[in-house]
Image (cartoon, rainbow, N blue to C red; front, top):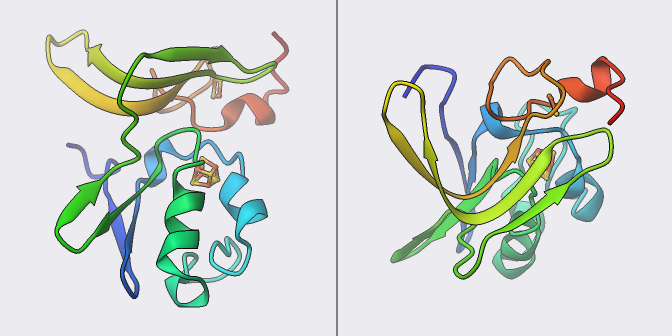
Length: 141
Ligand code: SF4
Ligand code: FES
């Protein structure tokens, strides 16, 4: 894992939110869905004390890219979605994939994921994943 592929933990009462900044595509589902917890303009941008564990988990599960995950006492969950895999092409944006997914990399290594957003515009600095750059280059397609 490279330094930029870090996971930051935000501990709360009954749930700890896991945040992988390199996977965030800045869709802001979290910010719009639970603004009292997800505050991108503040220094500690995830404030778990402002909502119940249940509400936070519900919101975390809606993160389309897998940047958000959570763990609770005795179990760990990273946005797991068991069952078939679904691909969705977002207009002017990434290819969303809801897993389970196994990614085989050019160096031969593999990575297991529950969900991911793959770059279609070519501008991401974190390929094969989307990093939100499609908005900056005004990607159409
Ligand atoms: S990708 Fe996930 S973490 Fe990033 S803004 Fe969207 S919902 Fe929030
Ligand atoms: S599709 Fe999002 S960075 Fe390329």
